[in-house]
Length: 261
Image 1 (tube, one colour):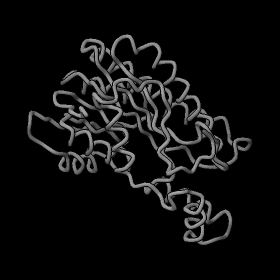
Image 2 (image 1 turned 135 degrees about the vertical axis):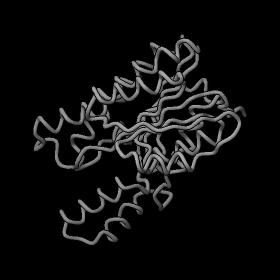
Image 3 (image 1 turned 90 degrees about the horizontal axis):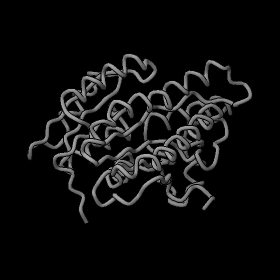
């Protein structure tokens, strides 16, 4: 199986922690040069220091906020000016929870900007390099709510669906140029996001966080949450030469939690 990413340059967003950080580590281990991006420059320095080196790998970081699309465009322009990007991993923390019916318009607008519009800014910045190489991988870290909306995450469910449709459209447009576009749908994963969701539910329901966690784990056939590196490994496979014929899919990494086929 060909997993070698030597000579490829990956841009991994939301890489200061969690799935983004784990993905950066996996891609570097496969030989890629990796640029990590998030708002927190101090955390990104630590991530770069943890990446595998040698073999011509050159790692870097860029600080930007996905909510600031102008600032994000400038940051990614500086990245591609140094070296074309062949792999783009779109990954942004989810919107606050709550029912869709109660969400103000501003909440939908903010989520649309942080996710879909930010992804479009990144895509348009890196696409020339992928087209020149006739090779590219775009992976969007989305959510299982693409297939089964999650109660209490009204804004997130809505935006995640829009991102999945955007990606499917792109997968058909870009495939003739050697560029694949896929979504990874993480289930419950040991990250700051899941701890936030557990905390919010505990407060709302007047229950302990341990009780909420046990209930969530019981709903998963694997009876545990995923680790970030398990999801990062799946993303890295989709970015590898071995994943070249996987295109336009939304791949769940959820331990079998979803009931849908």
